[in-house]
Length: 500
Ligand SMILES: Cc1cc2nc3c(=O)[nH]c(=O)nc-3n(C[C@H](O)[C@H](O)[C@H](O)COP(=O)(O)OP(=O)(O)OC[C@H]3O[C@@H](n4cnc5c(N)ncnc54)[C@H](O)[C@@H]3O)c2cc1C
Image (tube, rainbow, N blue to C red):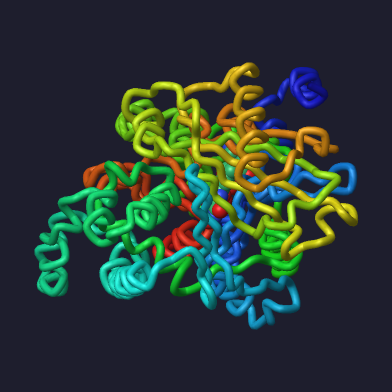
């Protein structure tokens, strides 16, 4: 305002405008300070670039946010941490010891599963319980194949930009043809699991790994049978200061090595410069290379305003979203480990409800996470944190009545399965649903992982890390190649740093 008044008063608007609003220039600008954005910024900085990260929230982290209230601390998003070496790599790039920044522990137990008939199975690296010798053998065989697939076929998808179908004609891929034409690629994950396990309960446990990228095991291909090896072969971990310490530590490294940040600033517009981009946020910026580290659909819709690309990519159906309750309890549920599943007895219906007929799910599977197993400081003495998550469709909003219904349902299931009534023990509570996830992180329709992987087409058509029409624009993060979740998000930043 002051500037405009001054400009019209002196009558040299253009020149003064140019002088006062002269764009600040960086080699690289990153939109979004989630884990993808910060790690992409670090990698760009490591190559000697000047780097600015623009974030709409007042703090970094995106989906890895935190709630601290009434003596309770909750990580709001991820709770399962695998392949921690991918975080460590960021510190090692700058010759720093990651342990000076954050620490984590390997967890012996992966998860305990409760079934509605009272059965309970605990999968652990050392002493699983509830399994027959045959179950144990079948799981071992399955995981060996799963790990082998992950370390061979998996790497050609995950460690480099997406491969175009025509590229598969190259002789370097001949050795994978057997795999690509195998029943794994033709059949669903659920039908593969039904063949591999004689116990339907083990099959159900291994179906659940399909939810790790927000998809349906009854639709996604058996290709995804490589996911369990991450947790059950390579191990699950948990940071001693909670998941949020992953973000805090990489953010602290980024500021130390000279990455600039602007917080509380929405990026509202991006225009092509030749070469590079003009970025409109709290002021005008210019850069040679632009990194989009937010949901690509939100970027096309709200920032680049490219309807053609928006229409093209929004055709892909979204992954699931989540209804998450954060409950601070004034008592402990002793049986509760770090990760627990209370399975529904209508597992297939649940996925039909999420992706197919969109019918409301009345008896969903419940995920419980108790961070105080590793971080006792997260709750007052004799108390406990309880992170409760139910999968919900990305498109629909959950009414307050429905939320209250699920709240009561969870309390009832905990009473039945774990034998503890927590109804009068919730001292603090908050929640997140698809609408809040969308508001907080810019995630299109509140989907947790961008598009789902329910078909082979969805897998091969995932949004790439670069697009032809926009030179020097790079995409990383949970909605683009190679996928969502912490390890893949970190890989996407690594892939684009090699393309920069
Ligand atoms: C409830 C929940 C549970 C999950 N569980 C797991 C799990 O157990 N394990 C796992 O590995 N993964 C899990 N995930 C997925 C994981 O959190 C994400 O894949 C990952 O954090 C995505 O990181 P990102 O940096 O790509 O995106 P985000 O974290 O979404 O970051 C994007 C950032 O961009 C900012 N932004 C958006 N629009 C603008 C704009 N116009 N201008 C400036 N900034 C903008 C946002 O505010 C945000 O900070 C979970 C996610 C959720 C929500």
